[in-house]
Image (cartoon, rainbow, N blue to C red; front, side, top):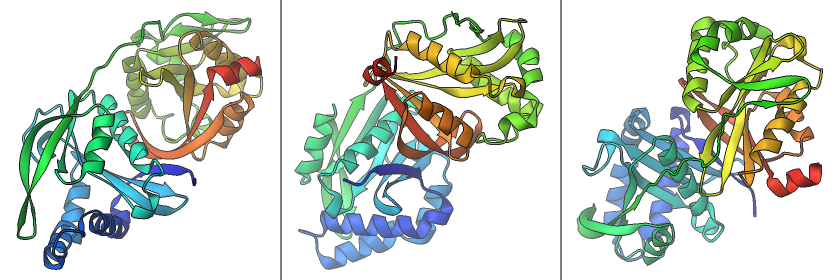
Length: 354
């Protein structure tokens, strides 16, 4: 099977969105519905002005599933007042999740659903909900398999035909990690100490070098106002560290654990940077080895999100045994989303590296 990647849809993807939307809706519902009803619905629901308004709505997001560069499915999510029926403000609606017919049975729908679940976790949604046509037993069983239960019905109009949708929801639970993701860690050369608000000025003195950020997703992080946002995200992650050179006690960079996921018992390591004075001295390998040795006592897998242009970090993480598994546009804390390469390493693979 071709690898599937997820990409957030932007305005310049408008015509591709219209095409995949009309194609997949027709493939799913043309049987049993009149040609006129289908034509009317497709023309109205996937009109370019309507899709433009939806893409510009900050409470709605679309995502493509790509097989290489080909769009083979898509997902639409709504929050807040954009939900198609009144629900809690902290709920998340899956309004659309469709896959091209030739890719049915290839787990594309599951990948799109997993993306929806990840977004719900990031937003700390109280529950995920959706409406599914009562005659679409394949979809109903898919959602039941993923923990959804029925909680109501509503009418859905396809042209002149009124149909019944089953409303289904999954309540979200957010167990916290039962281990410390912000301990003090050290090796012979450096110490990782939990980052505190009072560390801002000293850490910024290191981060103010533009060269540090040349290959990072946001090249302006050397600017103080931009770095303040980066630092706030680090503090709010509750898993960030300042990296201290034990030879002189100076802060030489930062890194963090974040986004523990109890579903697959995984965590991310990232947002790492070092003073240029410590490049090429093996510091990154020492830091990552120390973090992985610690965290693999508790999790089964570690992910890394690395900017598509950050060649230096991609090479470094590959040397640790991590493998690239996907590409995805990732939203950063208070920053524009950027294309990232996703790497992973499992506990078993790490043991083999030791």
